[in-house]
Image (cartoon, rainbow, N blue to C red; front, side, top):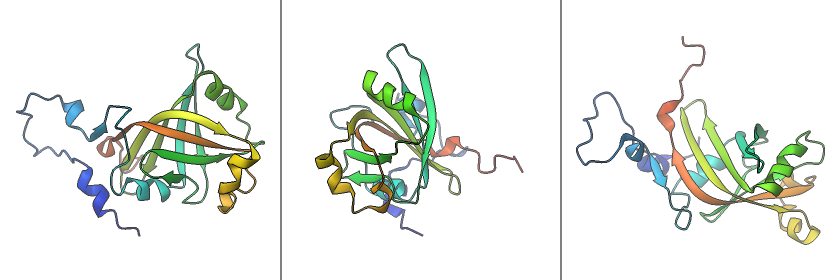
Length: 176
């Protein structure tokens, strides 16, 4: 199990025993939001490891008409690559059955990614701007990663917003 102590340091847990806000801030501001500013948005310590250990994430996009798509992308843990604290990458394959998503990326490059660890009830939301990498020279550096070897393209996400909303998920979806 990876060490998540740095990650947990940045998450603000709110329990029923937590006193009410007295600093004038809103609960939404207090609830684990890390960055609202696209120029300074970045992953915090431990977050890259959290993302790299996930085997799936949910991907939301929309075209210019506002028609939304929500899908999931899955692979072996580590299939999402993190570069520094500002970029994420994931592979895309020709036969994935999701051509509307690529069309959305072309029309409207803004996306939302939701990484969820259902065992710990921690989730991280990343909003950002997509760049589609599909030229052989752009893809070459990814071929050392097994999950990328058969990719038709690689999706780069420049991070513009990061938040953790770890307390929003039920531990047991069945409610038992």
